[in-house]
Image (tube, rainbow, N blue to C red; front, top):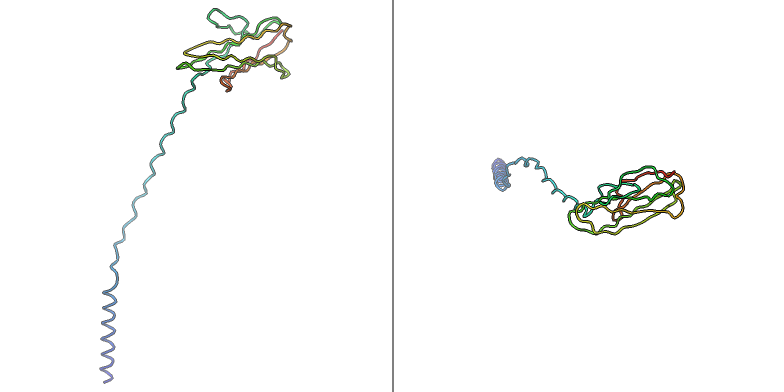
Length: 160
């Protein structure tokens, strides 16, 4: 009888093991992860809109020709006019504010003027500085802005 009980216990253990093995979930095959995919490049930022008006040159002289062109002069007399000639280029007609500032060597502003123009195509705008008295002898600096932005073409002149 003892042997019968042991055989009976072994049979139950065997049936239980088979039952547990049969109930076990089927394992999914292991699949390698997909190869790393590089992210798509970010869309290119749009190019900045072109300035409606741009300054192409700044010339400082004392005489303007009929076409408003000015020959560059670096040395002025105390009674000379100082003419700041700004060439602009605009693809389409656009309003522009051209500001010219004349600064004496000690930093004192000797003159400042603004010309408001409608620029279209290639244009020249002249801003004239004159002094009822004699200009003080020394070095001057001419700074020009277009619509409030420096045009990066500072000119230095001298009055003797």
